[in-house]
Every structure is written in C-alpha cells, then in structure tokens.
Image (cartoon, rainbow, N blue to C red; front, side):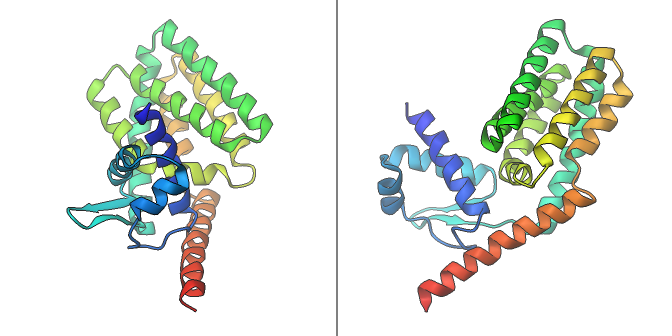
Length: 229
C-alpha cells in the first residue's frame, strides 16, 4: 500500500517541480506535504528517495529534501545518451524479440492509441513507459536494459512534459506504430533509426522543451516573488 501511495506522491511532486510550483533549492516541508496529500511520512519519504534518484531532489542528512532543477544543458545531454541507448535496444530487439513480447508491445500501442484519442497525456505516458520498457527487455541484453531503464527514470518528468505540447502525443503514437512495424519485420536498421529520432530532442522538440522548461522556472520564481512581496 505504501509503495502505491509513494508512487502517487512522487508523480504529483514530480509534476509540481517541473511545472514550477517549487523554486530551485527550495526545501520540501514534510509536514505540510503529508497534510496536503493526506499520507504519513513513510510514503512521502519513499517519494523523496525516488525523486532523488531522478535528480529532481537532493537529500541532506538532518536537513531534509531540497528541490533541484537540472540545467537545460544537463537535460539535453541526458536525452542524447537516452536516444543512443534506445537505438541500440531497438536494433537488438528487432533481431531478438519473442512473439510473446511482440504481442505485449502491440497491446501497449493500442493502449497508447486509446489514451491519445482521449487526450489523456498522463494515461498515454504510463502506456508509453510500458512500451519502452518492453523494447528494453526485448533487446535480450539485461545490462543494456538496466542502464536504459535507469536513465529513463531520470528523464521521466521531462518526457512527460513533452507529451503536453500540442500535437506531440499523436506524433509519438505514429512513431510507436513505426517502431512496432520495424520490430515485426525484423528490420534492425529501421528500429534503430526510428527509436533514436523518437527520443532525441532536436528541431521543434528542442524548442518546445526549452520553452516549457523556461516557463516552469519563470513561474516558480514569479510565485516566490509574490510571496515575498
């Protein structure tokens, strides 16, 4: 039960951080947040640990949890590495995916379609995450899958942020279908190229992410200024 509560609290805090409810360096008040989410401190602290693993929170002994907004350059570097990891996963998965896993990937694509048509970005993201995890596993390389999963977790809030950009969900869904087609055909080159482009932050995606991240930070500082005023 606590784990599910911790996941709920983590997602809520993650969203609050990246959309500017907290400024960089702000201390997270356990008492107030426990009251806000109507939870005990145990799931709250589990959420803090998960956020620390994603780089959005820093934990200091006897001082508490403090918000950390990664620099935009750091985020782009992580996306560059993520794109290459996913590309390798796709190339290997096209050669090694089992019929059972391929069927499970198809199911996630259908679920993504339902969420996209409903305009449910959070629901889409959950299915999108499952889609990518299955591709990692289909690579047949546990070390690679583990590294991809770890970086995926660090980029969760920013990948979720991208999906809120107008038209991005449908574009992402189209790319999922293309990846599925490549996996079904055993086309390792196509799977590699499409997954790299699917994850890479470039062109309009770069501009959209940069604008969203800047807006969230400006919102946080504006809120802080109004409180001080």
